[in-house]
Length: 306
Image 1 (tube, rainbow, N blue to C red):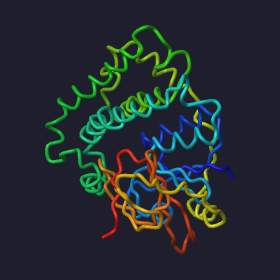
Image 2 (image 1 turned 135 degrees about the horizontal axis):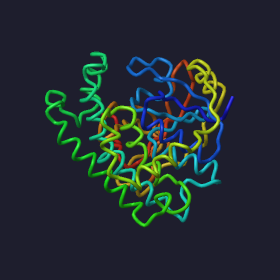
Image 3 (image 1 turned 135 degrees about the vertical axis):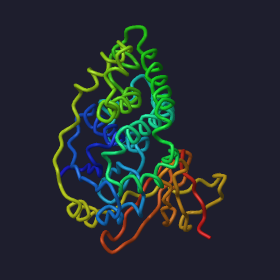
């Protein structure tokens, strides 16, 4: 069994981000397919109910959010790097653009253009999950969403304007993954994608290069096997709580961590790490004994339990 277990589903564009990270680093990994809809009884003991996909499991440590997952992969497997030329700060900052400004209209187009083919249960679930979409007027918003998505495609075209092969130069990096995954989503979900992408010649050539990249060495396992791995492992030693953190929390405090954009499902646990980059909670439950769930600090609200 590989050290890396990715809980995802194949159509997930954010899952594609991490599959590309595995490919750039040439890593073996185990794949656990997660149901599109809750309940997710084989994942929730690991995450405390966190809804977003994907989630990376390494033993009894669980990493949420693709930004943190990418940084953790880089820490554990520094070569080949996801962040050439000291680009970590730039690439993670770009993720704030691609994960919201680029992804949101692409997701709206994916839902709006395919609504008649999407099972009603998924539509109802996504009404709560995707709080940035107005499902009552989604079809009416399609022209606007096309303009927003097209404007982001133009940004990518300009990133490549000097003829470079990838966003930062001659080699692919996490900055390319940031820019690529909404395009990958469009190819799979937007029927008009060929015409939409047609004006962007450099983007289309770059897209073909990205599509040809490997996705690591994958093996499929099931959720029970992943739970067994967590039960048999011990989490890493926590990093502790910074004394000068503005929240004035302490290690051992009971806290709630909630995404501040969408999928706002709170996770409650014992605080073990809090610094400028990360917040981590210890969770205990019968199926796994003990896990530590890690979140990026940026984009997540941390509050003391009341």
